[in-house]
Length: 178
Image (cartoon, rainbow, N blue to C red; front, side, top):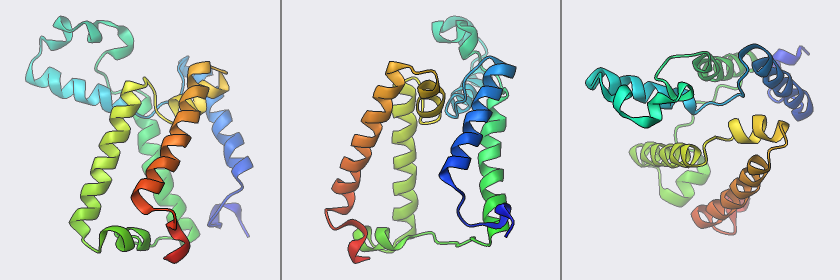
């Protein structure tokens, strides 16, 4: 069977591919992979449209790394959406499940509640990523490849918080009963 049509790929092959992509980003853009910065830049562009002087008055935007632009990192964001959609299509794994069984068991079948929960979770992740000055791709991939102590600390903390959050939301029984 062609590897492109498989529902699951080897994590070792995917990890190596992500590593090569990270090297390519460093070699061509002299910048690590990261997926939250484009959202920050887009918000800055919206702010600049509302108040054109904000980028000249705010110290944050005076740093060239924080200038409000649509750069190459948006291609990474776009690639995540296009790649995941293409992967689901090619593998035939296109379940359109809005409310997963585990969510139904814990919070009920309400689609608005599920969408609200996903939005709040995403907002918390984005806030945490900006607070940590990097996301799971920025710290977890690029930072750990550079052996940055702060990134290794980030990865350890995010794993601990993820386990704690799963216990708080879904309890000790987790998926065993669904």
